Length: 206
Image 1 (cartoon, rainbow, N blue to C red):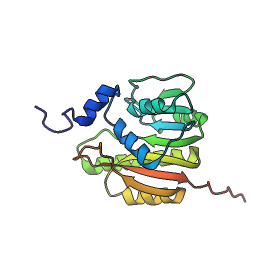
Image 2: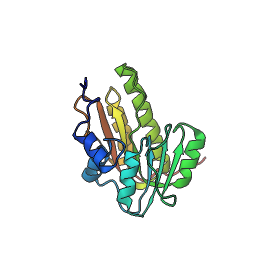
Image 3: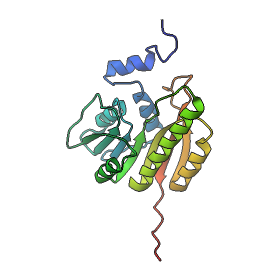
Image 4: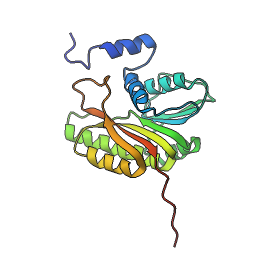
């Protein structure tokens, strides 16, 4: 008998299995995409924290032979895609070499991240680590997103949500938190969504 809902194959897990996705998290992305319209045909997209690959697989199915998807994770993927439309890099998003290679596939119209730290059982520590990942994703977005581009990133809810949204509001016309229906009831995760990146400020010299 399952001790909690994380051990039980719920509606979303069974649906994912039936539709050929490695994880139930795919339906979180599908709901976000439907609600906010973050993707269009032909987009170049970066998936940070892609393993096991449900988000990447869903995107490849939606793309219909158009656009390009780059993905990165410390762990290998359980999916593959056409070489002319998909590139996966196994590595650390904090690595300068990884960052340089991913920059080469951009600029991107959308950057998405379902990345989360390995949980320790200490909620304060886990939320701090989650906030650090979001900060890194936003660094990628500020460097590699086109004007008008969108970002989606998972966050463990703690004390830093407001500061992260305030940072996003400086770079995006719309910034808000959203918890999809497919999130487990007891989960303390939410997703931060930034829409329509503002033009980057002009460089100034001496």
